[in-house]
Length: 299
Length: 94
Ligand SMILES: Cc1ncc(C[n+]2csc(CCOP(=O)(O)OP(=O)(O)O)c2C)c(N)n1
Ligand code: SF4
Ligand code: SF4
Ligand code: SF4
Ligand SMILES: [Mg+2]
Image (cartoon, rainbow over all chains, first blue to last red; front, side, top):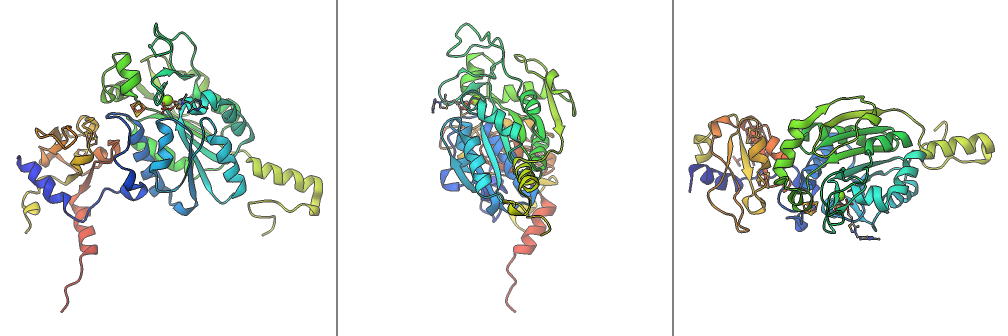
């Protein structure tokens, strides 16, 4: 055995543990994600963001739909909800409105949030529901075997597009922006520090917040298209990303293995659904109405 | 001095839970100082895991820790480790 391996063994027995372990349900680790899958890296960044956010973890709830990314809620040591496919956002909406003190985070995949769950996304953003939505975009339905997703770029082969995809994909930040999200950013799992910072920033902001995380699915997307392993996709992210904070979201759609624009695109203030409702009924009903949730007027 | 301290070469070091590593090589490829290599040994699941072959180059920046999708590695500065150990050390009874 090499000298360095001996050192590892010695260190492994010390009192130190990985700083993210307390955020994970350790009885469920190792997780099911494939070698080189980027979902774990995004979760790693999210754990750092939770530390840095200074939030009371008893008041953070995490909601996932179905999919490989949807497993995230089950691995995090928070109040976790693994909901049905596409319904993470309506579930999160109920959770937030039932208990407005909670900081509610939806963590799910591109298929879950934008195919079966697309409608919920649009309306939650339009209403400015006070939730953070983190979408791990691997351009495919990972869990079910690599079917074409609404995010799959034109070109690559998928199980349901054996001759290559010809459908135009969604540009996720553009949708979030157009629907009225208060915070929109896109990073890849190569940009670990920026991603952790964006997650922290978004955790501490109000309104409908959206972060797209580009992440490799080596098992289905990359292998099928001969793009190498997870690490090769992350190297592609490294070499082809340009940071353009404030970029117009309509210009940042993603092509197949093309240039990737990353950064923070939207950061605006807008009354949340609850604030608008309280405000509206207070105006219409005057003293008859007791504002719900947040702090009542003058208290 | 412990064996570990005599082998201190760089500003920091890494801690690896080799049994949960899946050998994806994120940590190895994205370490800014290229301090890590794959082990020659396999872990129980048959993966090679990272070893700090160039300990003198490790800054303890923990970028490997941020990249790892399996929570199998993290880096730390000796300076911070010493501080932490001092804080957690049980005082000797007089
Ligand atoms: C109502 C319903 N329809 C279809 C499915 C099958 N299904 C499970 S996960 C999934 C897609 C997951 O894709 P995505 O959200 O991108 O997650 P990923 O696995 O890529 O992280 C589908 C179609 C289901 N579980 N429930
Ligand atoms: S199938 Fe793809 S998305 Fe799912 S765990 Fe494996 S690599 Fe990740
Ligand atoms: S702590 Fe930093 S320098 Fe040391 S191995 Fe990890 S990434 Fe490399
Ligand atoms: S990043 Fe983690 S799982 Fe990948 S090789 Fe390094 S220690 Fe192993
Ligand atoms: Mg997906």
